[in-house]
Length: 404
Image (tube, rainbow, N blue to C red; front, side, top):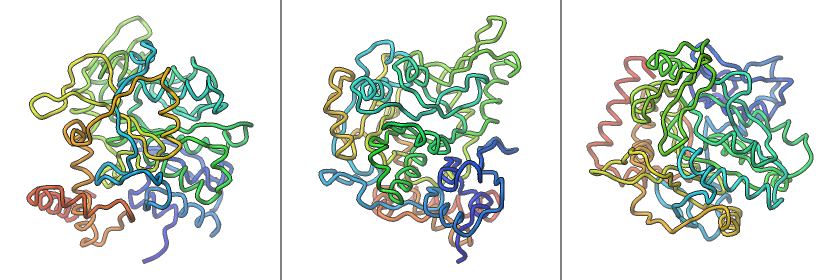
């Protein structure tokens, strides 16, 4: 099989839009831009050399992931959930951070703790663009107030890894926060340049069910009957748990949708193709990962509004030290791993069925990501056989109809 090129990665639908390729070859060579489908994709400013293409292959999380020495020696590998050295649930001690965040505010609280304890000088993360309430920007934040502005989920394309060259050009150590694919890309970059581990001592992530295109956001606005041109502020979640999707207009009107409608009925129908082949929705390459620690109701997550609670998975020695030293910033209690499937059923189903999906696509001659050390066979053994058959046949049918 021919080696991957950047063009082939994009055309095959395996680009996650993380921006790792920009970090690998430089912003003078590539830039991330929205395409006609509403995704952020790399655009070449000059012809890529063979060396450029090799650099792209080495850092791209879209074409494959493998576990090396990322996990702490004390971490156990749990099928579906990845390396785990500690599992907890809790929330930010600061009630303002807890309320503004999408769940319990633990990620924001940890970032503020890192800054105020001077373990890092700044944070590379994503927040709403200053000049457009719908667009995401990767930013460098150095204060509590700047970090707080980035609290809350942003269910739209973002390419924070593309900001890595600017972050590295700035003096000091920094923490990186991003989607699982973003973190995996940075981990690959550090593997290529081990000295960067001193500059980027913490990689933090959150569980991800996929990135919706900008068309999904526009559909949400249409449901809210708010034209984009009239928008003053837009939040996907936050200000409560799970929080409302909220659009504020320039003339003072406010329109809202509940989380289950905005995400469950609209946004998740606009996921990019690579997300449907993702075996790492839980951020296995991060030092520490957060997610919604949903309470259950009738065997399903309950989306009733209440005080936020974050699930916390500590994966590495760096993550252990961070969680252990942040007792004044976050309140954490141990969480039972047996409950993970109940509170995060989508993450379980997607990874447990991934081997069936990939097998079907290979039979139809499609190029798929290569996963090493993510234990897809073990994950598949946890799923009911009829569900695996359904995944296999459904994927095969979509391939036959040209829908993948």
